[in-house]
Amino acid sequence: MEREKVAAGGHGIIRLGAVAGKAEASHKSELVTQLLFGETFKILDTNKEWVKVENTADGYVCWILRDEFIALTDAELAEYAAHKLYLTFDPVSRLKLKGHESLYVPCSSILPNFDPETNQGHIGKSQYTFDGNIVPFKQKPSAEKVLVKANKMLNAPYLWGGKTIMGIDCSGLVQSVFKACGLQLPRDAKDQALLGEEVKNITDAHPADLAFFTNADGKITHVGILMGNGAIIHASGRVKVCSIDEKGIFDDEAGNYTHTLALIKRVI
Figure 1 (spheres, rainbow, N blue to C red):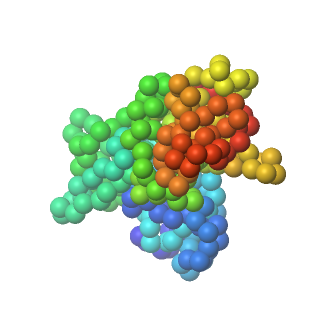
Figure 2 (cartoon, rainbow, N blue to C red; figure 1 turned 90 degrees about the vertical axis):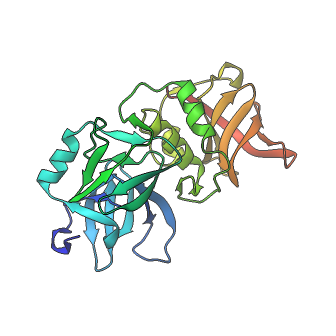
Figure 3 (cartoon, rainbow, N blue to C red; figure 1 turned 90 degrees about the horizontal axis):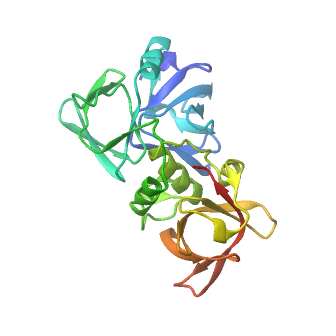
């Protein structure tokens, strides 16, 4: 990366599978999100080691390390934006880089400057080949697609701020699943809850509706995807399927209610 190009107002693109987005410019700072391969961002601020960025996809602001992305010129950003975008669909996929190197990328990674006819693309000056499962970034989402994708994430461990099969939080699961199915959602549960049409009763809910849950202070702190037949898939300890009713989530393994239902939203 050419460091002289990294300045506030510029842009960049993630060149690794997933990079840590920190609340502050410090290795000790809290992980608040991750930026995935091929995601672009605007540069808001910089220091010697860190860059403050705003993710183009969801507007989320965080700090990332300077060496984990490629700076984009205006011409390169325009080229990226002009291409039809494709996403990886499987939990983990392999890109083959020029020189026989491999790069493993998580679900919902963007394939920059990619041609599905040749399976070729490039990120910055680096060429790559990808022959895994892809989906167009803009597609009509369906409940069936959402549930298929969500089930692919089962048993991913819980990680606050995570967005991959190696570690994911509740809103990261929802965002990743819906993004792979054609709908970009906000990063956090409280913001996801502002979208869509409210479903008044759980008996009226459809598969792929989102269920939101509150803490003791009445704040929305958890979200999951309804599956129908009294089941929900969510990230709590790990990505798992639990029972749900009008009270909330009942963890069959623990034998008790773990989350209080506050709201159901239909976003597709």
